[in-house]
View 1: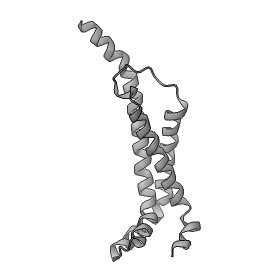
View 2: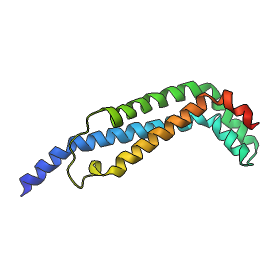
View 3: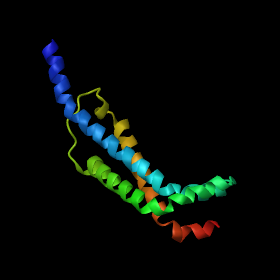
Length: 132
């Protein structure tokens, strides 16, 4: 009986590792996208919502770091898309975390949201004047 459980854990370990990497890439993309958009999009959204204050101006201090944040976010997003859409899916045991469709849906949603945020942050000089 215990041998079967050990085999199950060993067979499911690669699938769990792949699922974990997928989550790390998605999380890295989201964090990078948030950092890349902090200098530009966040103050614009806050001003549009009617929030003002001198502390909003301090968010623009991150502007010189936007290319670095965007580059890191794009690397994570690229690896995440590769992991989610292009790599072969490992065999998952029924009932495991990687066998659930929700985990893939969350990772895909996070990757697409991150992509939109980074694209908005990189193209803000073209579309932001329409909001001023």
